[in-house]
Length: 503
Image (cartoon, rainbow, N blue to C red; front, side, top):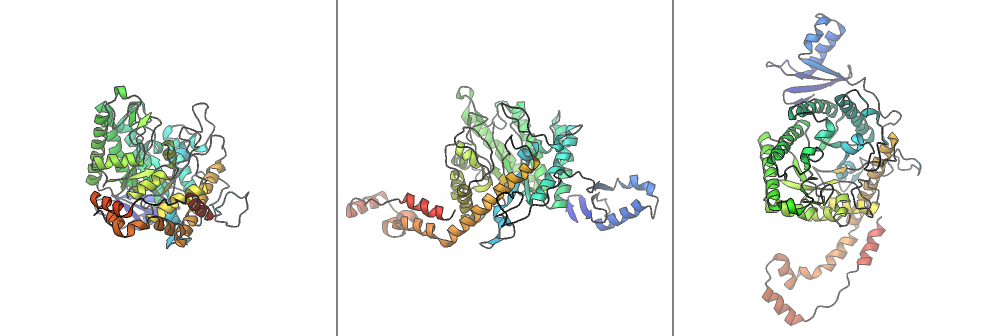
């Protein structure tokens, strides 16, 4: 039995149903009693079965036994370390229960499936039409499709064996013609999502609001020159925060795809940055007002769709947050494909955010470095995953964040099993990266090499620089006494060779 506000939920194994009841002013004594009462009504014993309709004012039943199986023929994905090259519907490296450095592998990795690419994606691109024709996207109405999509998603989560998922508000439910209609749609869909979460144990890693797709946001949301649009964005985020609390989300993400500019000629940059900061301060206040317990995250990206986005990279976001005194309320959700679009190496923003204590979560994907746009591919490069997991271990983990697969199968990968194969391959790649990182840290070769390189800061004038007590006069005296420093090799090739030893 699980409580949520004024509702209580109970999964009855005999009925194979999840039931919830609205607690009356005088509680009846517990959900198990409710389920027993319902069984007697259903069988016709006790009072007349004809009164069952009246009882539904108190007890609503959702039949989970009649759900369509969307991924028929695909069982729960097993761990088979001896599997051969052609066996792709099994984990060869990801062993959820394996303990490394005192923590289970699943707790180090905290995998999450993203809703938008995996269940809303159609394979369409600017040069071609839809190629992915999913059975859950077939329905008489948008809400019917949304419900089928949600059931398909939870079937996928449970068969894959992940404990988390992420979504935009407009992924979960269709947008209505008014804010009120959109909110009603979202209420109905998140009621269903909550039931499925309770049934499966799958949780929300993070929620975010889509403040970029609708035409109203073409000039931005929190940075829009029209305050009416900013107000609409605020109302949408307010509902998103309510949903995050309702579903127990562990994080809430802000990605400013339209928060930037195409031309500086028609843009007041100072005003837009101030408005965005004030928008975030309103968000913080509302979070505190409703008692929402989650971590706020900002996701950097340098461009696309805007020519220039204000959240360009990790250091830009950290500087913005510190300038507007928001850094105690926010951390960063780093997407490496965005990092490489900014001209950095794959691991750059993960490392930089971690150094400042601001790494909250990772959108685990990759791009094609030879292309100039966001391709959102599944991460399969073991070097990259090793670098990421080394940083994650060194900061003590990602919790309450995780590794969210913000990635999509290619438009040519049209079979349903391709969705599993892509996630399995990426999960195995991160499992290998985790094991590699553990070996690097446990053996300590790289750590000792780096420590030796900076040894001059452990004594004398170096120690004074380290603790912040040195002056320019002391540095000058030191140089006068010791002369020209000797040239010391950086040994880059040696470090790279040692790193490759662990791959």
